[in-house]
Each structure stands twice: as C-alpha cells, then as structure tokens.
Length: 175
Image 1 (tube, rainbow, N blue to C red):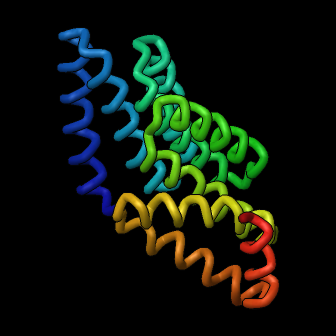
Image 2: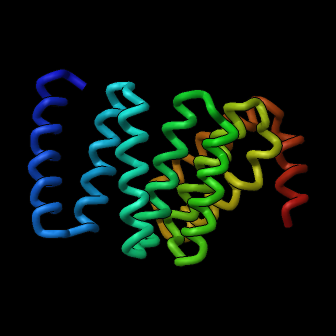
C-alpha cells in the first residue's frame, strides 16, 4: 500500500474510531479496529495488526457480537499464519469455526474451513486438507458463493500434488 493511501486510510479510520468512542458505539469501534488491523497487515506490520485485532475481539466478546467475534478470530489466525506460527493460527481458526457453527454463519463456516484446509496444504499436509476443503466447497457451492473458486483452486493443487487416484480415494472415504 502506497504511503499516501496508507496515511489517508489511517486518517479516516482514526476519525471513525473517535466518533464511535465518543458515542459509545462499541460495535462500530470493534469494526474500525478490525479495519485498522487490515491496513497494518497489508503493510507487513503484524504486531500492530494483532494489537488492533485483540482490542476488537475484546469488544466483540464484551458486547456479545458472535459474528464479529468469529470474523476477528479468523483474522487473528491470518496474522499468526503470516508470522509463521501455524499452530497458533490453526487454534484461532478452530475457535472461529466453533463460533461460526454455533451461530449458524454458513458462509463464515465455509470460509474458515477453506482457510484451515489451505493452511494444512501449505504445511505439506494435503491429505488432511481434503475433508475440510471438500466441506467448504460443498457449502460454497450450495449457497452460490463466488468463493467456491478459491476452494476449487486449493483442491486442484492437492490433486496435482497427490494425484487424482489418491484424491478420489480420500473423497470416497468421506461418504
């Protein structure tokens, strides 16, 4: 992100955060903190991104916004993934999945399953990724989400890595 765009984004997020805090609009405050985290993530400042996400998570949990909590847990996992802490990242994805399942956030469940499968693939664990990615694929397909293409891409990479025959064996064992 170019510095001028970064500075502009920070300026507007600061304005939003100030207004949310002045009016005690906690949900808006949490969302703005989440947005702050994404610009710092883009810049590669993972420590700052994580601090914003942790503050956002605290607020979402305090006000009982489970959807915001699930999304923020997913975002925290992405920061730990970028830092190379895959175990911690996967733990946050598992927490996100539980929250999203509990509130029946179907698109969120599929997104989290996709992220879990992608992480396993990137850790050279493609066979473990298949069940998660197949569930994500089925959900995305059922709800007509364009994100189905992301999951298809991961499944294609797995087929290239382990072969069509082994892939089909794993899929058959899921039924």
